[in-house]
Image 1 (cartoon, rainbow, N blue to C red):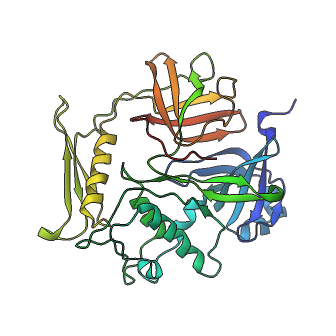
Image 2 (image 1 turned 90 degrees about the horizontal axis):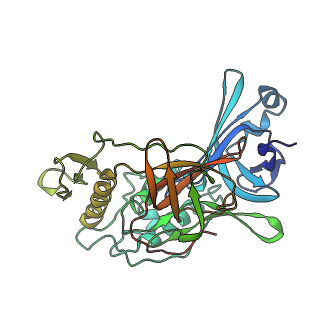
Image 3 (image 1 turned 180 degrees about the vertical axis):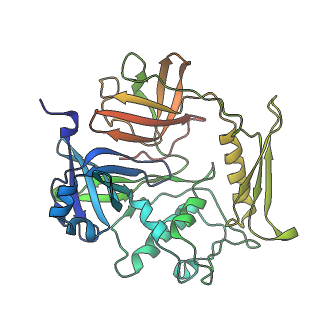
Length: 366
């Protein structure tokens, strides 16, 4: 009988041409998965004998690894790091958005696309990707959704600017515009194009990715295979967050978001010297305060393939019903999926969760 990991195949391809370099890369101890508003991650190992036999496969990177299950490509990652560690060769990668952490705005204002006044953050995100494609050997073929939103950033008094004399990392520009609660969200996926060709895509949605799922659920004794843990970390808790933005002295942009919740006042500082827009800083500060007030929630579950929720039937941003009866806690609530890690060797999935909040949705992934 084949092992669960045998369901998966890893295809190594050239990042610029998508030419297949190896049809079945022999990765071991593989873990990978996407992330809400982030690049996700791939971690795996290669046998030293394989690296010695075909060193050019790792020397001419970065390359792309596509993860295929039962003949269907489900995900893709740029390989960023490979190094020996003991008796194995460790490999690390991340999704398409990770490319922008290696690129900067060298022209200023994204080569004339800015400054931005009353701009939709979705437009800025697309402008960043468009700018990245203009440089020679800078187009990794990522398609970004044509989503729009009512959110607006930049004012006549405080426009969003990216000066050429202070080159900003492209990935950080996007991160600034997706971290606030009332701004768009993204993830990374691989679609299947004509002839089965993989299509790299960044789904972009407002007000949020995903949908409420009545067709799948997770429960202990059904498809949750490990007892989830619950934590009350008051060292990380805060009901008051002080946002410190760009500028110095009396000209510095500042925001304070505070609520009385019956607990001792605990404060935290959010340093965002890259943010000059007061409205954006207010939103980021509020989001940070809401996040730091979350206590006693189940933030991860390990699940298996089951008719109650077939493998990979969920998507980033989905709200799902979680029922947990364990040693530490009893939970029966709706939670939101913010990421997951595929563990092919055991055919299990580590799913990251957060409280669902309000049920408002944008376009769905896929």
